[in-house]
Amino acid sequence: MVISDDTKTSSENGSEIDRERKVFDDTKAGVKGLVDAGVVNIPRIFIRQPEELAQELTTHRTKLQLPVVDLDGIKDNKLEDIVDQVRAASETWGFFKVINYGVSLNLIQEMIEGVHKFNEQDVEVKKQFYTREPTRNV
Image 1: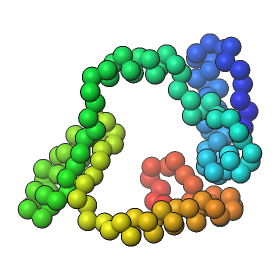
Image 2: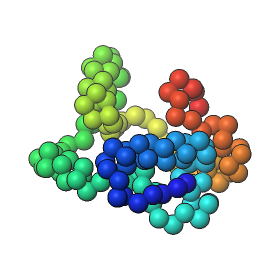
Image 3: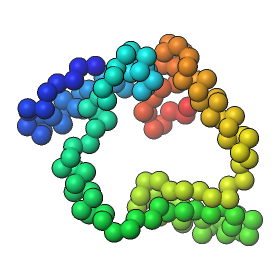
């Protein structure tokens, strides 16, 4: 991946970052691939500009509270309310915290181990799964 200097205009930087992001995506190696390749500095595609962060801090200086969706209500036939909460959190924040989902800690630990095992595989094996295509099931 080629990392260029930041002396260009913001639009030039934006298109260069877009190209770098495409190169990164095309490798299909993910962040682990960067580490395996010996990259020691965080690539520019993962760094937000100080002006962008300052603007965000100014905009969101109030106490932010992460949306929480409690799935315990499913037992009480409150599925429609839960779906509305998920929709609102997704549209507003893009993410949310889920509680009372009924997945055991043991299963979560096994899943994390599976993710580690997947990421330790050769890049050629992982390439068949890596995608940003929203229509492709993984």
